[in-house]
Length: 277
Picture: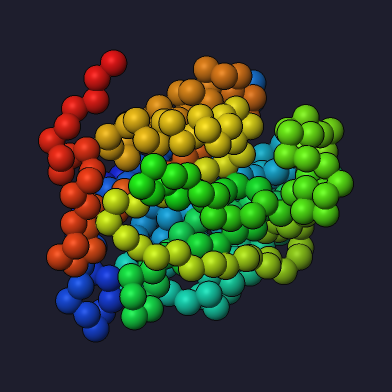
């Protein structure tokens, strides 16, 4: 397990070098080995403008080496105010070389998923979401949960082609087989999408150790009921562990409090409401 960066509460950041616009964020990253694994092969990075989770795979320590290589490379974007897709692509390509060098020859090879968000330099405040594998990015906003990334997995392909239902996917024997990864001596190919950066938004970045144990309904409930990014992250991880904790569990929760003069007046803290029960 490798964690790079630090957690923060109500941190103000300049959105772009040539603009006075500031955004106010809180974020909290957390990882746990789970109940059944001996080692934690997940890694994560929380260094603005980049927030990402990587879930390693491979024999022995290969998965941990792979996920660590990815977050180490992505951490190089820390403090950068104009990150492009090309920057991310190049760093993930460097990570593939690092993985081959660091892991050496392994029977199962070494690779990792990676998913996350990055502040961009577009005219309007925007998150750039990227994904390889089956770790996920979700948005919780105005009472609704949306899965922003699409899994690169065998079962997702079967769902997309209508071969199986989402209910059947949950118990499919190939549920853990992914179709895209960083590593295995192949060029990484992320999917990208843009997401508006708006006050009141809560983002969740997670490894499949969370989504194996919690349904989307459960994830939505805990994101809705916890007042801070830290409490949401800790609650999600604990619920995954309590449900079985079959895998390493890693989450990053990001709260957007303000964008310029636009403030989230509906947040728990801004409203002064307390959660009871």
